[in-house]
Image 1 (cartoon, rainbow, N blue to C red):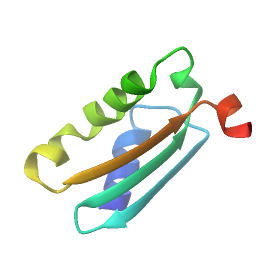
Image 2: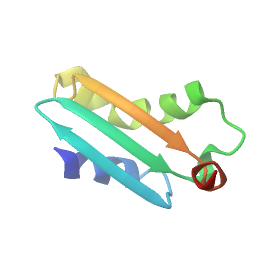
Image 3: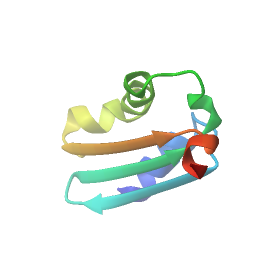
Image 4: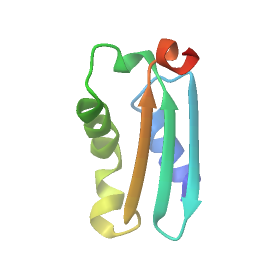
Length: 76
């Protein structure tokens, strides 16, 4: 499922770094992308949730922790 999550995100969001960890329907997504520039944390999370919505609805993802940063934010 980690590969499925990573592939779904990479099909929609251009990123500098993407890590997906977890198992048994509980996952953590750490993503660095300049597509988040000017977007609030809520909007960034909504972008990720929109990509993964089908897996959340089926229960394949039950809990999702997201850390979404821009490249500059990741350096500080």
